Image (cartoon, rainbow, N blue to C red; front, side, top):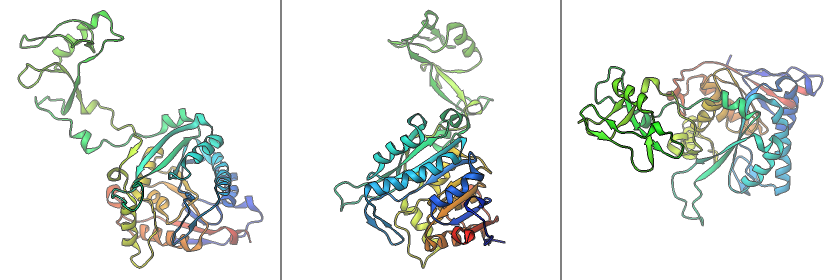
Length: 379
């Protein structure tokens, strides 16, 4: 069954028990309050894309509130979300310039300044907007953790990029495989005496460290590294000594950076194009998030079968991405009109829809999800 609509009656708010994968129609604060009994300390990753309060009127919703009303609503939502996070869980919050700094102060208050991890700058557009004073090409994602130490231990490295892999070559046909060379000298500020010496290359050429530098190894170790063919002197043997770092022993991943360009994490334009491929006769969302952006978040913050929550589900990008990546998910959306799009989108995903990240993650088809109307469920 692709879709099951639950109409079971509940006696009270806290008799509301849902199972992943599930999308829920209802006010996010009411639903989150009901989820707290069964999902406290269980959500590995929360991603939310709340209204930005930028004063704009969109086709699917109006983003206009007084500043104080907006802060009050966001604070209530964040306070309901906080206890749902697992010990190593994290929350990722999208926002733009208008309220970003106020949201940062508010999130510090709710989650604790010590639990702030980073601010990601996402290039949401690559074209220039000439009608504005400045062409605003980026948004922000605030990242907080329930416990930064636990999050650092559990968070994943990103896969090695093509650019990084291209640096590994094998010009000397080393049987250990591809490698890249790194400097064999370092700054001498904390050097010991045994890091200052003359290196004699296999061809007899002598090398001394540059002024203000020293060798990274002691002489005994350096001689041993040269003997074991771990020091590169260039193709003709006359080059400055460099250390060979082999791909097989390299840390198999990249530490996530805080600048996410469009070719790395997708753009609004990518998301709109994908949406129109799925729903060619529907009015496109003004600022949809691309699956590629959510993919990067889930790659860092989760593993397969971990639970993901999005309490501002919108067109269903988080749920669709999580489904394709074999993560469990719960999505919440108040608007019946918008949630109908998310439901239809998930049905397409289960049928094998091939836009977004489908090809990069090898998505075929399958799975199921449940839809619950929160108020009907309590009636």
